[in-house]
Length: 330
Image (tube, rainbow, N blue to C red; front, side, top):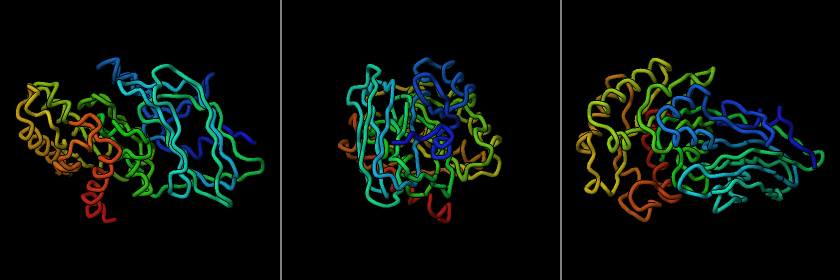
């Protein structure tokens, strides 16, 4: 078999700002060093999640008979311990492989046979775990060319946008959007994060086609009303200032079952949603308000109250695209 070179990896990777060559293998960074530092300054638990590969995938065409990957140091960065890869071939899931318990760093290899002829292959990296790609192999003499997406999407948000708690990395709402819009997604969401203008930075030379923001539910639970207002307004102002003219959308927080159990300082949940809409609109940001992006069914949430599971994300993505399509004139 032949190994895909570093320069080739750079052409087929999507969702990574930079690919670092390390002794363990290639690591795919979705944040700049300054952004990572900003998360660490808030909490070490936020900073470590910057190492995960949420939203990163390889997307290419090949006539290889076989595909093989060696990886190293696969380890989870949250309470959920799993770490999985998904391989799609011609828009169908071909392989789901990984570790149900990645609490201890581990190395591994997976291999899959591809159909005859040239195929489009997408390799989705773990959403809630970090790892190093040691090597990617194709059959001897195989061709390789990148897929060029039609759109580029920038995401800012918390755990739901990062992908909690999909076990299949291809099934998060971010990756469903990537397939639906034929888009490269830069997922800059971090589980447990709140509005923080310090994490905003221009991360690509060209403007994204649109930006999605999905903060709010953690701010409601963790902050008092004044801090919530100050941070949200500062974030909205800075994102518009950083990406002038780019269509930007704020997804209001979705239904959660523990509203009667939590005693937040920020006030009533529904009133906070209305305030978020007001602050976003004041900066020219379009508000996406669907409290039922995921239906009121606890079976669609992995924890029964907040984080969608793989099936729940199907509803989230489908309903979100229905809201976005007329606005994007797809």
